Image (cartoon, rainbow, N blue to C red):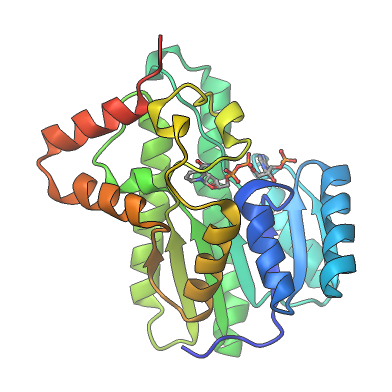
Length: 265
Ligand SMILES: NC(=O)c1ccc[n+]([C@@H]2O[C@H](COP(=O)([O-])OP(=O)(O)OC[C@H]3O[C@@H](n4cnc5c(N)ncnc54)[C@H](OP(=O)(O)O)[C@@H]3O)[C@@H](O)[C@H]2O)c1
């Protein structure tokens, strides 16, 4: 597909980590941005820095996407401003490690709301406009863990990322020939604040960063999204892990996953 020129790009979870790197990459390529996260001050700082560096238009919207009506409010706010969204980047997501039965249910439920339902609703809200214009891109940030059949110590998080990948793959096929494409991005362990919120600091997978940096991931994501590629796994090591997760017998995949997600003590 031909890349979209001078798009307006909505990036959720854009104040830091992978979302920030993706927002910066779109800005460097000359696209206007709408940045979303909860922390307004951090978002504003990011917006000021991006505007100063790239000279693109940047709008900041503070929103907690774990609130059930937040995606609709965000959509309506943007509709009122008359700014159509050409590219939607569903990046905001959190992780949760540990034994399923020991998880706080309210936290678990918020994670699932953010990782799956907010992404689904934003896609459902913005897709019709894109289809009407016969032009649009949706980039869904999943995870390498979705290539493993299931994730002991991360059961619900892994399941939520399976959902992201499966939804993206199905939609991508439905949208063939429409001018709109969906890409799923599946990063492996990446050094961001995710490790703190998901409590993964002492997991083997996070001890030695073998995958690409957020900036390298963002460059690959930009290319894949603009050209309408169905999926992208950043980094050779992560591609090998994905291959192992998918092709090896389930019992081996579980063992590999358990090793990577083992905590030190
Ligand atoms: N880092 C990894 O190892 C890794 C691996 C695979 C996949 N991923 C995926 O990559 C995506 C980005 O993760 P990251 O590593 O960049 O994490 P991060 O550095 O912790 O950034 C998360 C971003 O999401 C925002 N956010 C969190 N909760 C939110 C909420 N309720 N409503 C709106 N925004 C919210 C945060 O800002 P506020 O806190 O201000 O809201 C922040 O901007 C996630 O979907 C994650 O699952 C990460």
